[in-house]
Length: 164
Image (cartoon, rainbow, N blue to C red; front, side, top):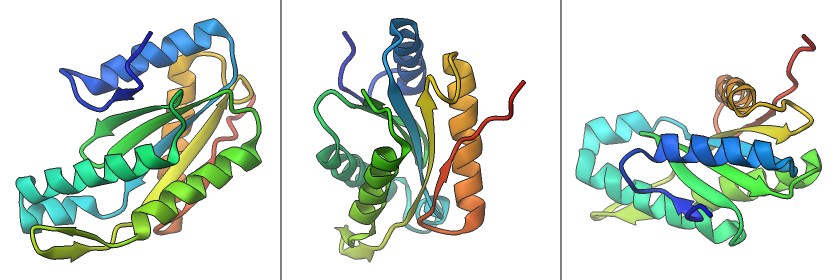
């Protein structure tokens, strides 16, 4: 069994990918969401790594608060989180959860005496509807997340992979 919060550790992205691979092998439905913090790199440059780390800690806490115990949250990059929503079968309910995550992050966060307002863009893909291999699902979620970011801040995009 995997730790429900793969936020820390030596390589959280690799640990999450292994868990994603196992979830695909198990054959049970789930949603994969990639949550990108819009413009976060500017915060790191302006306020420094210590403030950025505190913000990341608060973001992870807020995201975790909206998830169920069986869902998995992992930091996937400097300003990206991956969420595996177990048992998800419907796009509508997954998109509703994505909107909750975005809304939760839009509430002001005060760190080191500075108030921050963050926005996030979310890419969503479903197993097995949008792919049966973990690497394809990850590629599809990344493409959807990129699409959401190019649409503007606080957006959701859903993966609809091309038929091969």
